[in-house]
Length: 211
Image 1 (cartoon, rainbow, N blue to C red):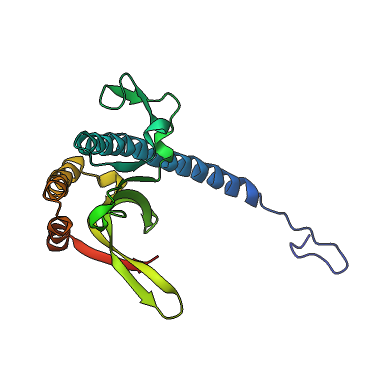
Image 2: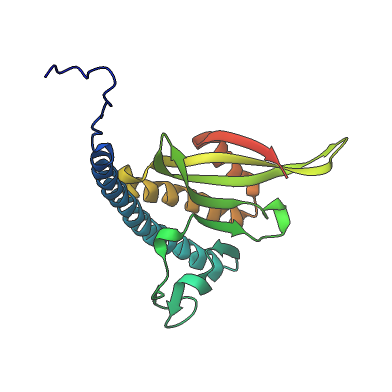
């Protein structure tokens, strides 16, 4: 019989099992992406463990000298103390370190315009990769806008920004050492400009915005 179907005969087309191959690929990608997310969660947890501990050390150092900061996350959510606030402490069981998106210290000093001076670490995405960015943000003053009224002008300086798989804690600690030394001294001097000049001289200005 001719391989060609004769006139009047029905043609049968054999369908290939296209979904079987696709499903194998989807399951493989699911496993790879799940592993990627696990790696990101593990890295974030370790980075946050270090940063929260570092920020709490800064908080206690300033607090001992009567310089009061707010902290996010709040110590009540992450810490279990043997002796609050200066004694030993540990992370609370069940506290999800990997879920913390922002860690920050905010100056609560009312004079010299320091309210709004904030050391902040947070995560953002660059080319589909998770980066850690550390900035210092402060209020430069107020300005009156015709249609919006009085607005506070905020400025941000970049301290550090890198992919979370390339984080250098030693480099971050070097930045903190210099920053905290000048920040603390500016409080002792009661001279905020002393600190702001340090920021402006040593760290890139990345953004100005109003609130």
